Amino acid sequence: MATVTSHGTDIYYESYGESDIDGAPAIIFAHGMGGNAAIWFYQVAEFSKRHRVITFDHRYFARSACPAGEFDPARFPDDVMAIMDAEGIEQAVFVCQSMGGWTGSQMAIQHPERVLALLMSHTPGVFEHKSAVRDLSSVADQISKPFTEIGSPALAADFPEKNRAGALLYAQISSFNGIDPNVITRSIGTSGLGVNTDTLTDYQIPTVFVCADHDILFPPAYLEALAASLPGANYVNLGDAGHSSYFELPDAFNAVLQGMIDAL
Image 1: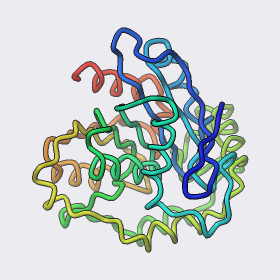
Image 2 (image 1 turned 90 degrees about the vertical axis):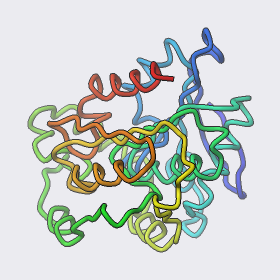
Image 3 (image 1 turned 180 degrees about the vertical axis):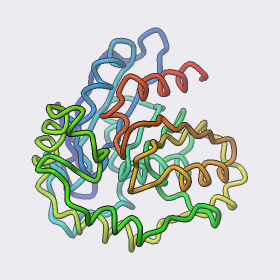
């Protein structure tokens, strides 16, 4: 457990496992708006047995607290590279959930020498393409529907029924963030960071987009079309889960990540 300073903000992170375990690559996990470093416990427990694993709180979240005005997704790459430099990590596999996709996708475009592979979990990140279209009115309608006291748009609607303890744990971890969600959506929406994938003709980072059937925030058809537009990218639908398959279906999600690492 440590911090690094980036653009005046102390970025909290955790390191697990050993560096260079039989040449196995380091893995960096970038959480979404509903999480923080703690949300990756399923993945940390599995992959730290064989890899150096880094989790962190994005700026403005939990233990990386800062004024709302300092939340700027354009600073995400500098924040994570500060961690990499502090830990002596030259390259890593990036696993990015939802908002965290703005970290990994910017790293892949701006600093490809530091990214071994990119797993985009339920996120477009900065990638855009005319073929990938979301019905925002439908998204707004789905989000506006009532949820249980431990339900969330980040989970499948029936997840609290299937795993009440898991849904409660997700809500508890999220509650530690101390954020105004409107700050996140507004900052990302007005950031101007989008990159048309048609311009990425030299893109060479092994990339996998992961989605699931009941994701109401970034539906499968949207991410499948986006994956098809990015050179060399693949798409995996994990089926019966919502926006957080890494949490709802951790074994299946971990298998996709392991397959990506094996392919390296």
